[in-house]
Length: 187
Image (cartoon, rainbow, N blue to C red):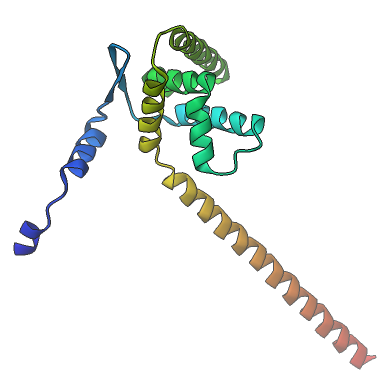
């Protein structure tokens, strides 16, 4: 009982746990308006990563995450698209997808929503430091641990498969050698 009294969760962790349980949005002030930004869906994260990868393809000087973060925050078009994706995140509903046709229609609808929001952001009078603030708060909320865990597990599985294959080939080779020695002795 005393151990429980000594161990108290910091208030930040408690807030984060409540946010996760309630799927509560983060309130982000851009200009004179407050926007609700919900936890990113996989679709939104994928779109943001595509914007980042395109930025890296266009600028070969980007060699680490700090340079990429700076490039994202300083490229107004990329920033506007990322902010648009974040602000529209709650509108991307996977429950409406029932077949290929509806998936294509929803993807097209999502593209239109993002383009509209991006244009709205680009034509606004937001201060670039506000854009960077929003992007930095987004990046703070991105959790790629499950992605990297999947990559690690895939690497281990691949290594295991390759190892089993090598051992099987070695065993087969040794068996063929033993068999050829056995047939050579009987001749």
